[in-house]
Structure formats: structure tokens, C-alpha cells
Length: 329
Image (tube, rainbow, N blue to C red; front, side, top):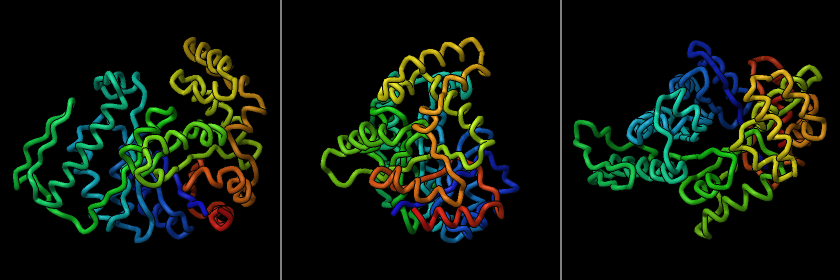
């Protein structure tokens, strides 16, 4: 049995209450916000206020754009407001975005810095919940000051899950080591999850318990008109050099190099033509929405614990199809 979640992508704050209520009524297990055109945390405060069952999380918030304390505070307040339904999903982004979009320094070791951020966040939560002295001393962060004036105090459900996100083995191993779940990037194939990501999660766990929850976002084509858009999305992600391991796993590294070269020259319109039907079928599932459930189950059973379609959700549109997928998964 897999859970079906929903991505609430680029949602203005004014639309979040009604959208979250509709998602809960349809039966989605969780709603995820992303850090694209809007802050990922603010919409979830509204969603928590207007729902009762729906889990709420970031998929993802950019870790390197924030301090451990700011992330700890945001998560603590959202967990309290939602009665323990909040999941803190963190990602690293790529160097160009950290340096040129957020204006922050790129770490010498992204995996090491994210590990320390997660440990620091948990140390802060522990201090708030127990009243014990904050004394976190790492290579990158030193957190030793938490006076009562700045301590929000304990909450009813302090065990806030942390999910990490990534494409390559380093972050998957880290998720196995320190996190509760792993958001698999939509740029994946079932074979890559089976052969690379799941073993990395298990390796990171080192036998200390079950592997983290694997949450996979899936490209879905539910109408002929969507094929071109999905080709464009896959071509865009495939042009990212740090994601090339996925292509290399299938012997398609040369295509990634060609896409990167086109992207560097701004020849975006030429890129989708390199995503032939074989690649499209490897990265996307295609069927009418009402018939997707069995295909998703066959494709991801034993690989993923939660699925999210890389597809906007519109209240009242195709609710029968969404209900069918939820029942079939």
C-alpha cells in the first residue's frame, strides 16, 4: 500500500485554505509545498488552520538559504499549529542557485553541511522540549545560547519528521543516516530507485533500523497535450550536470552532455527533441488519470512508500480520477 500525496506548487496564500481543504476531502495523505515562486512555509500555516487530517510538508525548503535556528523555529511552530502533522523536507539546491539566487555561500561539502544542519535542528528541538542546556558544537555551527526569553517551550508532539531530498547517493546515504524520509527527485527511473537510491538509504542506516520512508515525485502524462510539456521538463533536468548519474545508470550519459551543451548556449527549444519515446517512458508514466493507479502500483510497489504526481491539482477537476488512484495505490 502506497500513500498518494499532492504537490501544491506555486500557490498564492489567498488560495491555500480552499485548496488544502479540497485536497483533504479528496483523500490525499499529505500536501507538499515547494520553494519556487513562493516561500514554502507560509502556505502551510494556512493549510494547517483549515485542515484536520492532511499531513503538511515542504518538498522542499532550501536548507542552505537558512540557519538551523530559523528552520527549527518554523518547523516547531508549524508542528504545534498542525497537531503534529508537519514534515520538514530539506534540500540543498545546486551551487548556482545558492550563490546567485539566494546570495549565500556554497559549502565545501554539501552533504557534511546538511548533516550538521539536521543534527543542529534536532539539538535545538531537544533543548526546547526538555529545558536542557543547548550545547551543539560542530565544525560549521556552534549553538550554545538559548535563554528562557527565546525558548518557545515544549509542544505536544515534538517528534517532527525530517525528510531530505536529492538525486545522487551522497544525500540518499545521509538520509539513511540522519533523516526519517527521502524525497526522490522527479528526475528518476524505477531502476535508479531500485539499484541506486534504495541501497544507499539502507547503507546510510547501517542496520540501525528500517530504511527511511521513500517519497517519489512522478512525471505523469494524462493527456496527449501534456507529452510536450513533460519532454521539456525531463530535458531541463537532464541538462543539469549533477543529475547526470541517473542517465549514466542507463547508458545515456552522452545525451546529458548534449543537453548541457544546448542549455549553456540558451538553445532551450532544441532540447526536448533529444528525449525520445524510450527516455520518456523511462521517466514518466502515461495513462488517463483514472487509469494511472494500477500503473503506478506496478511501477513503484516495493520501491516507494509515498507518491506525488508532478502535476497541478485543481479542486473539483478530475476528482474521480484522483479518488481512483488513491484507491488503487
